[in-house]
Length: 254
Image (cartoon, rainbow, N blue to C red; front, side, top):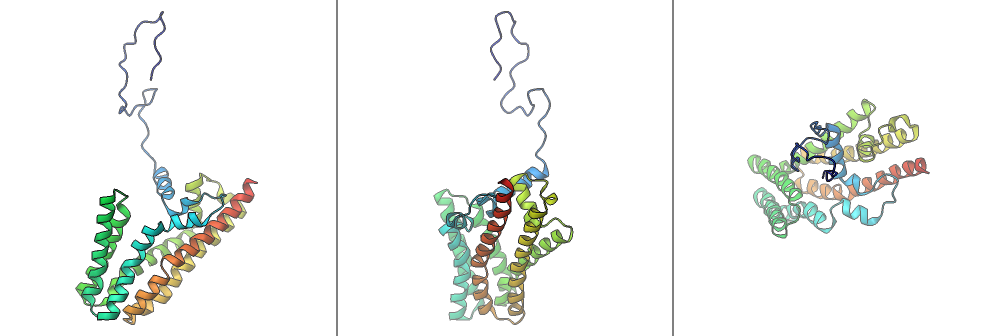
């Protein structure tokens, strides 16, 4: 808001700019958000942002990172329902349609309670695609194909980041902290490289166990291992990552 003109000054000829005017105070247009800004915002919304490097992670932080009670229910219940229904019936259609119906319920509950609906919608889309593959082929194990592809994509991205000497966990940490010079710090570079390899190990383990079950048409075993190697394994790796990143940033801050 412009100051009142002093008595010796005449009124200004320029009309005040509306709040929506994209110009800055000097009349120049505000720059559009950069790609780095967009990536930083995405990183701040990720599970990694629950604990900033250097802060002490707590059980509450880990609980929030996996989504709390609602997040756990929405992540685990569809897979558990598939396992139960498939074990009882041995039929593809009810085994994939019951979890799909539950995913729709999750979206409706979030809409009614006016809580963020996007996580449930993303989950519904993934479950719907997986169910469609299983119903189209008549093979229950196709319900897990999309998950295997997503794990393979993450594994590839992590390995590529290591190959180009830009370990992905380091990139994410830099986006969160603004620490553009982390690669010039040997301790930070080493820790962030090791934690990236830790995530490589998690995705490799998932694929190493689940891909043979997929090709062996062991849908029940595939459902069980996916439950065990899903949220629990993810939470464990995330926790260790936090501790390692925290240790090196805390030492540097001291």
